[in-house]
Amino acid sequence: GIGGGAAMDLFGDLRRMNKRQLYYQVLNFAMIVSSALMIWKGLIVVTGSESPIVVVLSGSMEPAFHRGDLLFLTNFHDDPIRAGEIVVFKVEGRDIPIVHRVIKVHEKGNGNIKFLTKGDNNEVDDRGLYKEGQNWLEKKDVVGRARGFLPYVGMVTIIMNDYPKFKYALLAVMGAYVLLKRES
Amino acid sequence: LRKNVEDFTGPRERSDLGFVTFDITADILNGKNGLQISIFDWNVKQLFLYLSAEYSTKNNALNQVVLWDKIMLRGDNPRLSLKDMKSKYFFFDDGNGLKGNRNITLTLSWNVVPNAGILPLVTGSGHVSVPFPDTYETTKSY
Image (cartoon, rainbow over all chains, first blue to last red; front, side, top):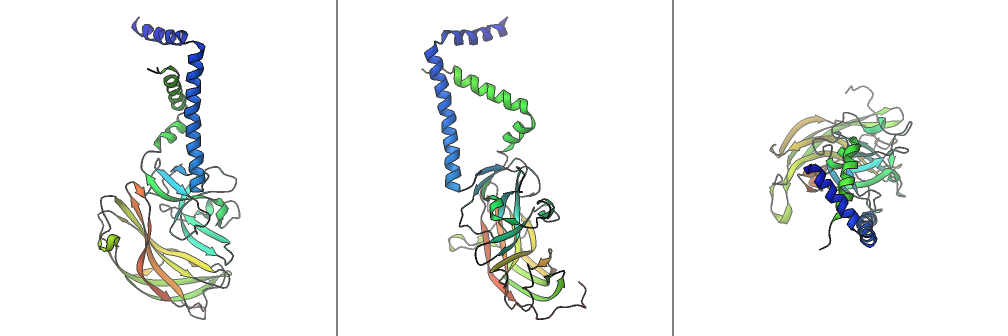
């Protein structure tokens, strides 16, 4: 049939490519992946944050940020933590970054600092989210400070997370494209 | 930008708890390039306003506590005229540094949330210094 014809063309392409062309395409692909990783690592160094771009996962900062918005972070060591700032932090032992606002700061003369956070859209502060017995956050819990934001763009990662089939389909399509595209 | 306050403190457990009432009269403007224009330009989605108290104590060189906040959406009136406001959040000190503290500075600041782009924090010009009394109030209810 007609659909079968297209599939045959694809396999025909693969068989016609000799080994050298295949290796070339694989190396091409590896180079793209390495470049992407390098850019990401470069961002980590430049911003000082282990995760310079995060996706907002909950509605606790509405109406400013919604689920799926993208945030750009910096985490410079000398940047003081001040009330009103939007910080992204991780509770000790948990992987999920939380984006909330600093509402209380107590800093000692030696630079030792402890602070409390709260989501704009939440009634109460974050003490319920912290570890058992933990009342304050410290600098080490901070992933970064939100400096800029783009709406909606992060939705892609949320969809990929919630629907893994979509992620695999996307990877398969990308892989096929890179492996099969012709150099003119 | 003007604020007037009155205050009294009460001890709770082992930390000082301060009570502040205030008036806010403010005009939120964008002072870029020396011109005072409306803060709500094409790329401003909303403002997150907050009143914070900043002070020093024996325990901590710097303390900042947000007493009150408000979200101002694009389209809202950028003029604020609030009277007799009570603080939204409990003004707990980390210790007993409010008693007799003569210099608590109240400042109004805001976080500009754009439709897309940079998230600046702006501090309003004009702030008010508040002293707390030397003794605790035990009779007033709040």
